[in-house]
Image (cartoon, rainbow, N blue to C red; front, side, top):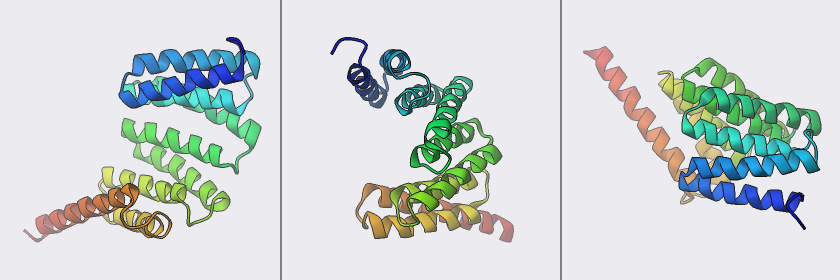
Length: 199
């Protein structure tokens, strides 16, 4: 099919994903950038696959701790996705979610919550309450509340996530187990803070 073909770009993207999972972020960026250039040339800027490439690069920069770059690429992805697929779409929710993650990593918890709540609202509207991505949003919101020291709120959202995980994925699923771990950590934090208050 040649170099300049969407399938070739997709293959570069897949290789980029593997390098990203391996933690080889320089190689991941190299392959994601190749994918992005082809998608931009062949499909144009305003295309979901181009947005996906911007998103992939943004996630790598987030993993590298280069949060300004991460936000730059994630915001480009969001802009395209909203333009092409509209506000009420799972991919748009995914973009809001990724931006929320960057802000959480930056320690800007108000901004993180703003974006995570946008993702949650779309996921509830489009995918429904009983969906693993909706549970993911509840979990992420719980993490931010936990990071900001609001353990009561964190517990509230982790419990919402757990309820969905149990129904949709089952007790033994890694994601359910992960949510149970989050709940255990927050409960311990709450007990410790109550113990300090009693002293």
